Picture 1 (cartoon, rainbow, N blue to C red):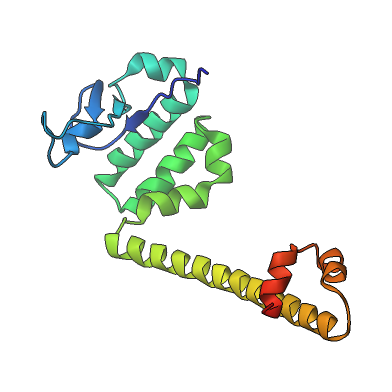
Picture 2: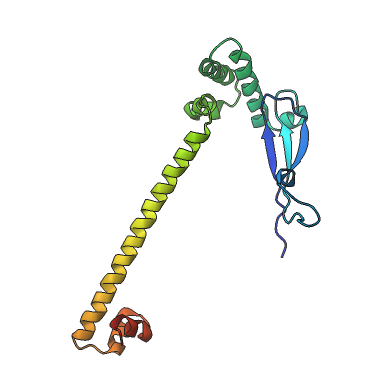
Length: 188
């Protein structure tokens, strides 16, 4: 069976000087490999530099990418003389006036501002990840508790039916459980 070929790309817009396109390999980050420890997995990623002027053909073919380049360049330029928040706000206003990313910037203005002005912090990211895991754990605990409660109620029901004179065959019909499961619950 054939499956579509995956294509992994990264759009780079950082401030360090990078080539227009480069290929990165996951194996370059592996701690140890040689003939004794061959690579069993390789991921190749094309990295395109999307800073203004670095990939003009790509920007020409994609209006959204071109708009993003313009927006990012404006933020960087205004950042030289004003705070980051002011630079983002001014770049947003100018891009909207110049019909660049208008719908996106109008709809997601606050999210764009927060994303660009909030510094990523490993400790905060780990804290949020822990909180999310805790919430998932609480939900899983509730589900497991509900399932345990249902199982307990089913066991009680089966014992009451048996003590009330119902045959195992009748209990199988009523509960849709297997005969051996019912016998196990009743200790027979």
